[in-house]
Image 1 (cartoon, rainbow, N blue to C red):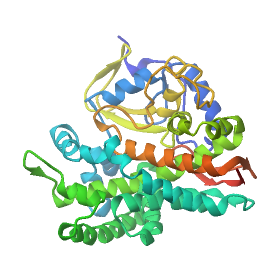
Image 2: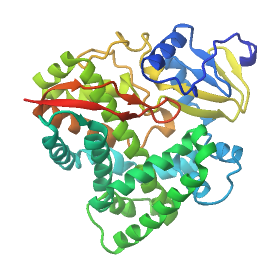
Image 3: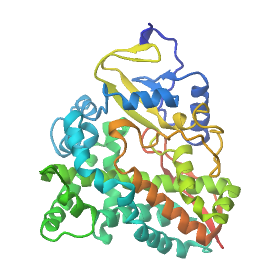
Image 4: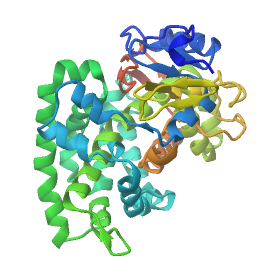
Length: 405
């Protein structure tokens, strides 16, 4: 049985700053054509869906957040405390306990409660942009929609949405080694600011519960067990940080896909019931979290290849979601296609499957439904500006014209 280090593998540097746009799509497709595994400077990159899901579901593969902190000498301070208490870095029985307590607040039914608010918000933000000529859609629509949506769900004041967006954008950079190496002081500062803002709001809800996520988590109980203050604060922080930047970016990537394929937009307009399928296809075709890291805690075999303990694995959701063996016609964006029933890996898999996946889907679906009702055509005014794929794959600038129905 071959050892991983003995294999002749193609090189694939996921941290290359030039990997963005069509160059990224072409490089990822070329890597997938060469096989299920590639080598990056610090890790192995898992490309095919079946192998990727095996890694994500393995109990011997953990998220290396704390190990990354140690690598950068971070062993105290706000960022370390946030990482130590982040549910993605908690494993085993402790993780199972936390998920058991909070899962009822993140079911499809729980997400559905927010749909009227999300649709009204999307309608409000869309209305002044339709027929108004060229608009920069990230600033005018995607950012305020994502931050105000998360603020409303959590129960934060609507006026604090810009603060939430700023904190989320900075704190999310802890998962990008390049940013963490160069911007640690700013990230630390933003974590401290968010804690200072959040804790009084949690204390207020203890005496004045409302119909929001903070109140729901305060009431969460299973067999007499409840969340500690630290656990609750960090779960709310995770929702705020994890949902804002990714929600904004996924909507912007979706708008870009529809601008480049007007026939797909016309299909959605003709059948608004396709909004869930359209959201799922956007999440499949251009996931804004292209890579998920896992660290092997023990020797592990995948497809007859042995990987030693301590191996860093990068699961590529982009290539996994475009694996033609799993998704027929995977290389085309098509909201009407039958993809064969395979589940996308945009939100991961296994015990660390994204807690906010149902809320993220509801948010994207309601935005698409609002736009489809008001906009006859999405026209691209200028080529978009995209970030590299090493962190959240974001659209920095997206100039569009939204033609009225």
